[in-house]
Image (cartoon, rainbow, N blue to C red; front, side):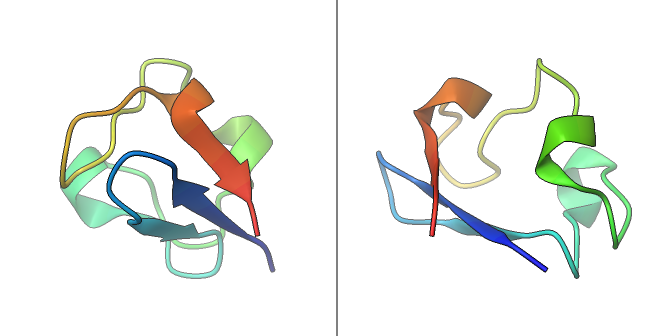
Length: 52
C-alpha cells in the first residue's frame, strides 16, 4: 500500500487505512480518492499531496 503526505501540514494519507473523516474507505487507492478530497487537518486540496 502507498502513503501520500500533505505538503502543507504533513498529514499522511495511507491507502491501507483510508480516511473515515472524509468518507474514504480503507483500501482506497489514491487514484480513486475523489478529486475534491481535502486534508482532514488543514483543508489542503488533493494536488498538495506527494507520494512517499
